[in-house]
Each structure stands twice: as C-alpha cells, then as structure tokens.
Image (tube, rainbow, N blue to C red):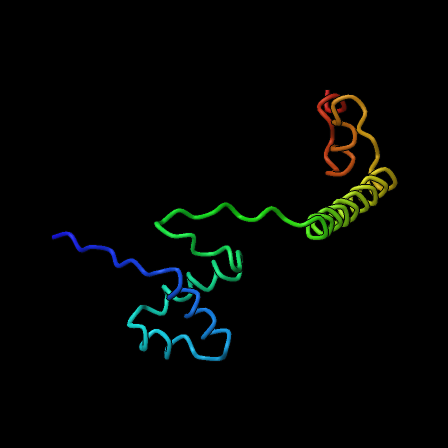
Length: 125
C-alpha cells in the first residue's frame, strides 16, 4: 500500500515559521497544523539557512546562497588562525626534538643499546 506524501504550500510553511519566530512553541504549532514536530524542525532549519528564499516549492531545493564577502572573510580568517596555531605547534615540536633527542648514527643500534643497557652483538663476539 502506497501512501501519498502530503504537500504543504510555501505560504503555510512561512506562516508556521513566523509563528515560531513569534513565540509559539513547536509542539503547539505541530498540534494546530497537524504535522509532526520533526517536520517543523526541518522547516525551521531551512528557514534559518535560507530565509525568505526557503521553500521554493515542488521539492526543488535552491542551492545555498553564496556566502557574503564578510562571511567568507570571517571563514578565511578563522582558517588562517587555525593554520597559524598548527604551524606554531609544529615549530615548537621540531625545536624540542632537535634539542632533546640525539641523532641516530647509522642504523641506530648504538643509541638503542645504550638506552637499554644490553651488550651489542659486536661486543659479545
């Protein structure tokens, strides 16, 4: 048995979102409109993301509005800050390893044997 999907008009969705913005609770609105609260939450997310461009109709979602210059600038500044922190961390880690770790000569056997306190195979012969 196939149930037909209920279609809601753009005007109804916008009116519902304005009612929620006006203070009506999601549960009250869901009862009044006889829709599920999760559906209202999906509508609300689209409304917040796209504003008046939300709910274009017939199941065709509009692509997200390109970010404004200010928003894009804020994203890029945030990314620059993140990369700066990562670079500083890596520089400090590199300096630490240069200061505190002896370079391994050859295959590193001498350094490993010295740390472990065991005799090397060459000494045992």
